[in-house]
Length: 94
Image 1 (cartoon, one colour):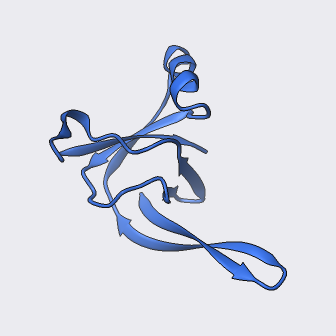
Image 2 (cartoon, one colour):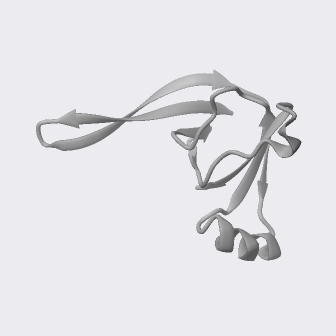
């Protein structure tokens, strides 16, 4: 999976986002169950998937994930369980 940085750019006709590939990482992509989706909607209004990956310093909600032709936008902030800097758990929407 590829981590991309999304930046806003200005054009004469309006605003245009640009993306830059910043890293290729191993991770797991898991759809949220109906129970988790209900909870996620309370906390992360639009989350439909969870991505787990090794800790990636600097990962923020300004990034997104690309898997083939699929794009996953980060919802909320990436979580760092137990503050161990071993993994990130990220709620995303497609």
